[in-house]
Image 1 (tube, each protein chain N blue to C red):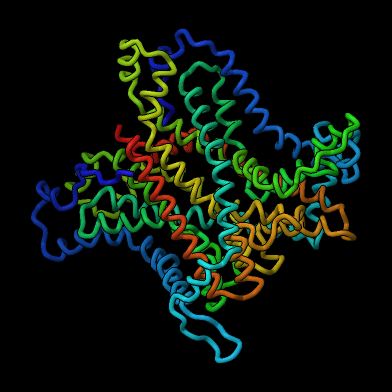
Image 2 (tube, each protein chain N blue to C red):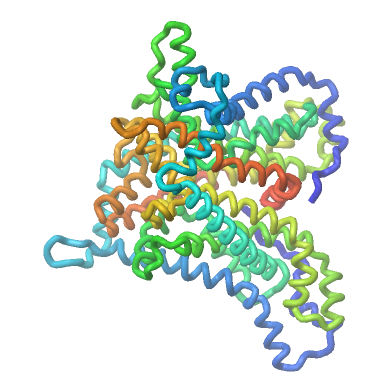
Length: 295
Length: 314
């Protein structure tokens, strides 16, 4: 799924087009998208007092970032480290598991004809359009009943069901799997599960990485369900914990020093995802085109 | 969305080169696809279908101070429909969507068209730069913009003070929805850009050459060839954006900390049903509200699908 080679149409369109207005437009927009992040990075190097006393888009005299990090992990009995670990654990298990389950299902839809195929796929598609809030109240009640609330499992289990992942995998599998190869394996007497594990899965790997990455980000950034299902502060995820500190930081009388901790914590929370996107660029940029092939 | 695709899917038709199977083998061959599907559908039934049924059942009852829980049929739904605060929330998210979706998708489409035209060098910087905010959790995005909007150490306030002006009071009742729209636009424009961009990349080059031979200029090619061809992808982004708008929760929930008098407990439908369920323990009423919201969202999505269909076929 490498990026398509430069096509003649680009040159076609380039002819006679002046690119200066396009550059100016894009650069202004780039500033809009990047300035808040630049502000975040700069602010994380200041003391809480310097947030107020120095200009937001420039550094304060002393570099306080490492002290902020130390404070961040020390504050509130070191809860931030727990939130980081909870978030990582939840995101890894949910994304690896849900992508594997989606791959199996997508492969089945692409590879076999069977009774109920269209109906089942319709059911998968329909659920993509159901708003998530419908599940919030019942999941909360059911998890409480089954004693799972206030465990990471309560948020991991529902995240294993990823209908959009199934949709993407099916489309990808229809294009990527060479039928001849599968047939040859069948003639050689290989069983269907061996064919999947040894041949098909390797061919599906790029789509697997894409589905996994987006599931990982979805889990890492999730807020609504974790907010409902995890009520003990040592079980919070990063998003819930940062929102909690933020709500404390504006209360009069409570230490305002929390501003700088929320800012530093926000930076720590986004760095892993950004690195992941940068490292895996080639996969997900190609992978996104999956959804659009058939629209 | 067209998804039926009669491709050469094998399965039984494929049996010809393989020796005639015995009956148990035939059984396994028939069972194979269902075994592949099983993990997904077990999860689907347990974590999607069952909660839905449970919640719907819940929404038909009402807990009373005297006499315990009573079956009330659709009375909770009737109450939702007559609940002014619910519709106020719907109105807020519709205004939000009406402001935010056209701006976001307009920008996303413009970026995608420009980047796909290859008139720009160093495309990757722009593609990644625009996309980067998508990696930021919406909670962090709301926190971040909340600080930027703020009157104490927000950069806008600082610039105003440096110019000896009064720092602008941004978080007002009139401005709160556009301010939230800005946060979502900042976060999701890049993602939508990539979806449209990927669809543009799939257009065969011959089409452009044909249009060029017919004497079409760049604007005409964009308007008459490229946009119609990626229209299904755009419709998909519109529908997901509408569903997302109706679900608005994180941004108002975070901004409520800095603007508590403006963002009340029924500011959006999700904020409202969250506070009903988790402050007042009115789970039955909250469940009815969630279903009503899902219906509103389904109706809107179908409406958009219907309204955009004609253009797609043209």
